[in-house]
Amino acid sequence: FTDPPKKGRFAGKKVLITAGPTQERIDPVRYLTNRSSGKMGFALAAEAFQDGAQVTIVSGPVQLEAPRGVEWIRVVSAAEMFDAVMSRYDQFDVAIMTAAVADYTPKKIQEQKIKKTGDEHMALELVQTEDILRHLGHLEHRPLLIGFAAESERVVEYAEKKRVSKQADMIVANSIAGEKGAFDSDENEVTLVTASSQIALKRASKQHIAQAILDAVHDMLKG
Ligand code: CTP
Ligand code: CA
Image (tube, rainbow, N blue to C red; front, side, top):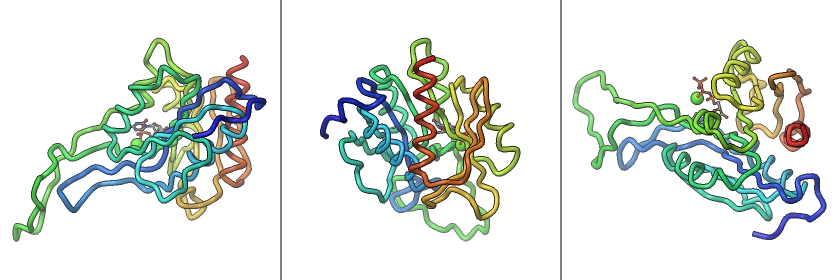
């Protein structure tokens, strides 16, 4: 990857971004996943690089082009994403967690394809994954931490709860209610929730939203 522009407002800063879904293997032909295109994270990466930051993306499987100048670490599962972030977070000034991480993963990966049994019902035993954002939030020395929250109701209220419980500096809350959701779209409508403010942004391109998020990050780094 190439060096970022030397003059931008994030010159000398290192930004870590998680993006996309994770895939949790069930057996050789099946997995559990989340809906996520990765576009928000990749837009943030491109904008942060333009602003002079050295950027690393840790992403699950996505159908996107590598943003110019950005280091890209590809993972598949939530456990792999956790390890990729935990092994390098201490080199970063800012961490932005846009990934739609699976909350649960199969307790055991079946080595052979699971066959129908003739029973009408079947149950899959799942265990919780590690929460990467929460883990970082509770460390003593950690980067400035930005999380996302996709909510279908009481968007800002739930986002604020997540901010406090995960000890993030800011949560970007977006509503997935109705058809105006964020999935696969090039646009998004979000509220930036911090300890001191709740700023609702107009529906805009993910590039524009990325710039607004980075404006807030820039202010927080200064303050
Ligand atoms: N997150 C994470 N690791 C996980 C789960 C979530 O880092 N295992 C991060 C996401 O990247 C996001 C934030 O936590 O920045 C909130 O994710 P979200 O799914 O909205 O919240 P959860 O705490 O998982 O709660 P729930 O899904 O029950 O609403
Ligand atoms: Ca979740």
